Length: 423
Image 1 (cartoon, rainbow, N blue to C red):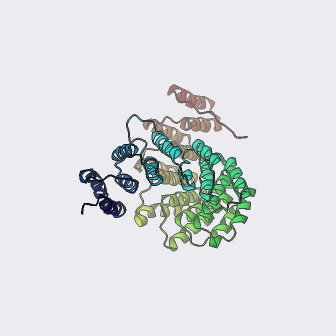
Image 2 (image 1 turned 135 degrees about the vertical axis):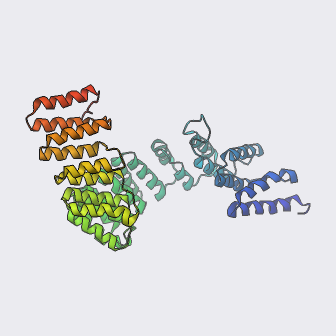
Image 3 (image 1 turned 180 degrees about the vertical axis):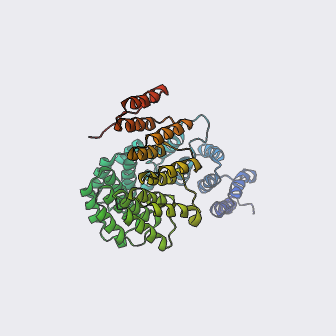
């Protein structure tokens, strides 16, 4: 390559950069290792590509050793070098070094961030990880763009700080920052959880023409109206959404089912299938829930059987639970018991509860005792099974048997969790 070291290092860096962009990444690191043997010193145009290659290969130990070399060579203050190190520590798994605390990688990234002379808004956004850290960084950011606001609003919503999410949105508007689709999704989620229909309607007004919005915004708006009790408006929004994905269909099927419109939910489910969109296991859960609560036994069986037959989706315990609940609500307790015995899962408290609920409706005390015997065989530690049995006996005026069921629960040292209320 000649004897001009400055010309040679330019060529060498170009090759390292090429491997870092196009691979193989191992070649990038191999060439970096060979530089000292050729009398070439890496610098701020070399290190970023080497660090990035270490990240691509998940060679974080090697990346940390390169970091040591960077510190010794004095290039840590270079923006490009610091940025690559910063990204490496953010990507590094928390469990990378045995014995390190889970926030160790964040501490390393924070140290590099604090030492950087230039810190653009994109890097501030990346540092907004956990809620406390996010709020601290958010308040000290010299400049905040829509991504910064979205990170903060969504962080609050994910941590159950729904009122704070809405307050931040109001503050965001007052500062003249234009919200985008991700903003609306986070704010609508907060409205759904708070049951704040009026604020949700205000967001709907801001969104405007749904046909021009992203499907995730329409889906979030549909769910908001449903969660706030206005299923008619939820359906109206769904109809106006342009290109609907499976999640969008799932939301409206679930919404109709939860609001007692089972037949309409199944019609929408069948319409979805006609469009050629493949249902997922959540779609089937909502459809089976609708059949259960609407007494649509024949449709429920057809839908359940189609899961594996038509879509190669293996039913989960939630799907079996919906089917068993459907049978119990319609007095087909023996068939439900057979399904419990044949299914490839151990029944959970929801299934035992469905069976006992069916016994309570029909007043079948013998079958209720049989259900509890079966539950005992599966060594269930759920108090609900025994409480339901006690209530069944009590409703039949069998107070001694009711007390007996409670005593069995006490004998197994199973405690009923205390109820709570938000009122």
